[in-house]
Amino acid sequence: MTSRAAIFDLGMVLSTPTGLYEGLAGLLGTTPDAVEKGFWGAHRHAYDEGIPDRAYWEVALPLIEGHNVEDLDALLPELVTTDTGGWREIRDDARAILTELKERANPVFVLSNAPRSFAETAPGFSWSHLVDRFFFSGLLGVAKPSPEIYARVESELGLPAESLWFVDDKAENVATASARGWHAHLWVDDADTRAWLTEEGFLS
Image 1: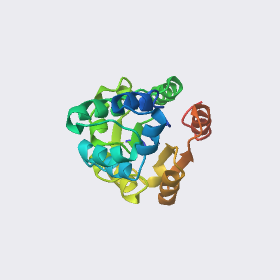
Image 2: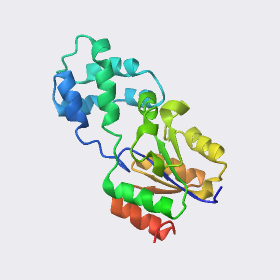
Image 3: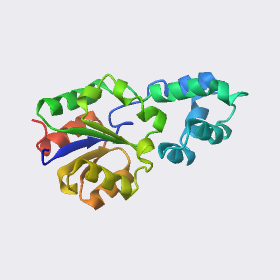
């Protein structure tokens, strides 16, 4: 395997969830703002580490003001489909970056915090052919910024930390990667990602 690889977070770094909160609000009978406030509570981290869909929504719903859900079991499939669907497509500029990396024979990986139900849909992504392998926290049982998930990636790729270039939108995730010796960059936008990868010799 090559001596260097590019690794990307998914949410925000590649994908922007257009319509996610609006779609969930329609199902829950409340507002997008109320959904967004409850969606990202501390329970989301446990969801990213692999707890079942129902266990997540049981604790998320009380945090979503004004929701109108009487039968969670009946609504659960739609909630999961809407949640996962909001992150599946990546931006055109992000797709262009991945495409150019692949054209230049650079291995490309995704390391993302995401529930198991989302991770299991990855083979069906329209852009999955641009990624050599996905690493999802929900399947690994550990989430960023735990050093363990970075160690798992190193081990499974058979590459040392100094051979990994990583982009993430959360400072704590970048800090942990940097502490391990990864070349880690805090995401700003697609143009900034492209500029950084060019400076690092991945793109021209």
